Length: 208
Image (tube, rainbow, N blue to C red; front, side, top):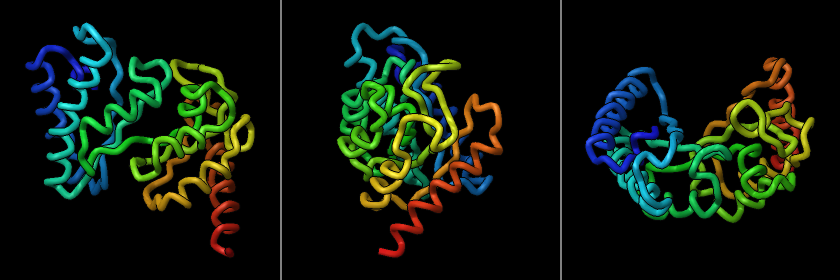
């Protein structure tokens, strides 16, 4: 959704009209929410604050459209994007200021965006679980590959996947969790490893 933060208001308006149609399709297909990826460059903006302000303006209107349909939107920032820090994420959410606009939690992205320490749950805690609209569950080794952060099956990277899942649990997250097999050679094995990780932590938490 690069046009969503373009400096040209006509481009932003055209994006919003496309978004409206996407929401109609999503609802017709039985979707709960719609995902957005604010890729692209500065799109004519002179400063990052300008780009964030334009994106927030577009997303605020998009959130209103979602709310009117009983849905919500969840956007995802990634290390290669121009929006790629905790501060950017916090600013966007604060400026949009609408409950129907949330963001994705992907441990691989949060890890790379917070210094590749293997503790993406720390950035999640700093952001606040209440802002998470969708989860892309994957492990990582803290590097970038294939145009974004490297994805690995759960348990094969340096992240504590159980810590991420517990943080989501403790924060009251009750939405969808997708096993993210982006650029993983054996996606079926990755799906099985992700499901095992989910089952293990929630079985432990449920017995407490």
